[in-house]
Amino acid sequence: MRISFSIIAALSLAAAFASVAHADDYPNHPITLVVPFPAGGSTTVMARNVADKMSAALGQPIVVENRGGAGGSVGAGFVARSRPDGYTLLMAATGFVVNPSLYDKVQYDPLKDFDQVAELTTFPVIYTVRPDMGVKTLQELIAYAKARPGVLNYSTPGAGTLPHLAAELLKLNTHIDMVHVPYAGAAPAAQALLSKTVEVASTSITVAKPQIESANMVGLAVSGAERWPELPDVPTVAEAGVPAALADTWQGIMVPAGAPKETIDRLAAALTEVMHRPDVRERLLRAGFYSTGRGPAEFHKRIVDELPKWKEVIPHPSLLPLTGVEMDS
Image (cartoon, one colour):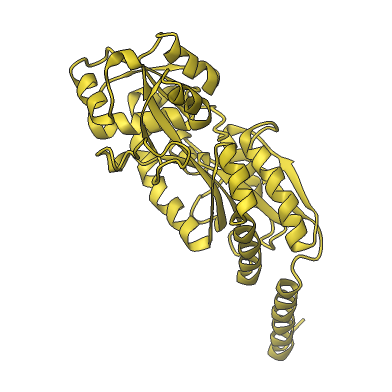
């Protein structure tokens, strides 16, 4: 059976108009926000908070769905294979750019399978030491460690967490040798320092802040691009002389590649507006998150910049046994 060119053209034109109309009235039914980790982690908490505010801004329900497994690869792969219509979103975190180097095979291509919508939050790692060491700056720690290769122990909230990877990035860029001692969470990692089990801790700001303020720990540097507002005297790694050790955890929303630009713009506008609200920023800061609300271009640049950085860190011998780690930020 022959179909004339004019009929094909008419059908194509109709499809194009339907697509535009669909984008113009987006969203017109509920949206699913996939969290690629089991329920209960910080990414799920953030997703539920954002979903409530997005729902009000967009006028449609946002359903949070947890699809954990393989460090976030399973959920990301599910979204990558979903229809690119803006109704299935991914709540991505730092593991999104780490997994391609950590696993032999992941279920998505971080550059080809997704379009970035908005970066929501970041939060840095903080490096702390015991007061009795007499170390007051990051450069003094580096000198101390170089004089004692393999002697210092550092605690983290667990193997494969950002505090672990960030510390290994610091070691790589300063040529120091410290022994990793993983714990089951940020609080036990901090307690290991307080009890003098380890000399150094790479951990979360929320746990370290009260100990620094009470002089039980010395804060040397934060791994983010900016000083933490509630610890203004603690410099960044760049200010401390190691700019290549920049490493913060981030959370953001993506859509399957090929989603209409109008849909991405609509989502991005709603998300960035929410994340820049003063009450939202203040509440997140108290919880240990820095609200960034960066749009598609800036978020995409972060993905492009971080993929090669973690690819350089992951082959380090101390990181090879990490397969299977759930990197929920």
